[in-house]
Image 1: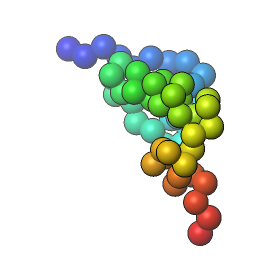
Image 2: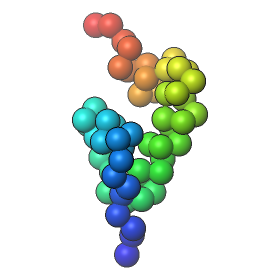
Image 3: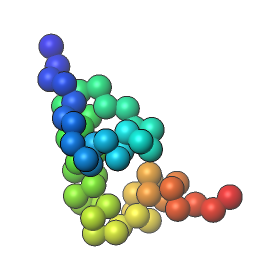
Image 4: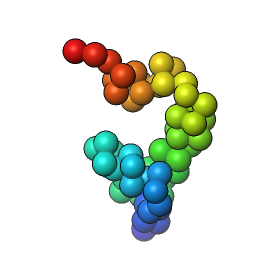
Length: 56
């Protein structure tokens, strides 16, 4: 059986944006994304960040 997703302020922020985290693998992926793309403000290098910044 899979380990449950982590719960912390970062994963909760992602979930508020609609991210689905069903396992520890999912939450680790979003924590990696946050550390390597969000914190250094590389939004345009990220598909999620690019969509969030896109103006309709």
